[in-house]
Amino acid sequence: MSGTTIDGTQRDLLLRLYRQLYQIRRFEEASAKAYTQGKIGGFLHLGIGQEAVAVGAIAALRDEDWIVATYREHAHCIARGTPLGEVMAELFGKVTGCARGRGGSMHLFDAKRNFLGGHAIVGGHIPLAVGCAFAARYRGEDRVSMCFFGDGSASQGAFHEGLSLAALWKLPVVFICENNLYAMGTALYRSLSVEDVTAKALAYGIERDRFDGVDVLEIHDRVKVAVDRARAGEGPTLIEIRTYRFRGHSMADPAKYRTKDEVELWKKRDALPAARRQIVEWGVTEDEMIALEAACETEVGESVRFAERSPEPALEELFDHVYA
Image 1 (cartoon, rainbow, N blue to C red):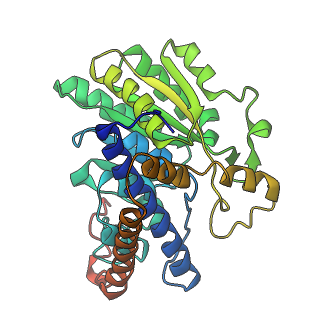
Image 2: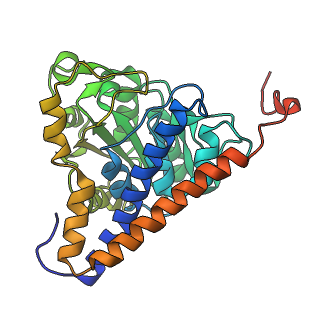
């Protein structure tokens, strides 16, 4: 973990980030259970193991900044501040969901918190994040756009088009590649000729950073450098954070393309218990940690009950918000 001495501000930040990590982990587990019970339809892409990337990076933003994410975006939406009940209700397809039950797991959206969606088209959302950054520049607003995407997006044309324009106009956008080593079931070495995704930043003359996402404080601190640079008008940054999903690509994926040894190796580097150990070393008692975790579990349980009790969208709403 970052730091070797007790720092009150740093400890308080880590405690807040750990609360989000724990809450999201339990939320993901609860949603997996609900899916197996048939309460969630469509696809469900869990981010168990990857939570620290979203939590650490989003903590470096201001409320007015934009976030654009992929379809593995539960953690990002929750880290942004969308209430657990609204997220779970969206997974259930209920009208109380953050997108009124229209988006489901892959298309979480919370405009009032500037969370502009999970997007299902691989790489297709990157130009949207660039567009948000352009809007900020055009309007003279002090806002940054943050775009999350997987390693599978780094070979898409939209990725290069987005970086090219952002670099040309020095737009306030931070690109974060959540490299979990697999594009669905395709290993990184089979899909990228150069496995360092940030090497692509050299072609566009923008800043880059690359590190492992096992320390949520390090993620926060290093992403904040890029956010501050963007806000100061110094242009975009491409960041690659190596992480790992402990489960398959989706609930339908048994993930037999990975070895048990590989999965266990990454579980030993899990950011969640690492953060917990550091907090205890910094003086938070075990009783306080247990109370915090119990509160998170209660909140997750309440989110499931809220989703279960919520009504389905009315049939007459079917054609609302349809352009043609």
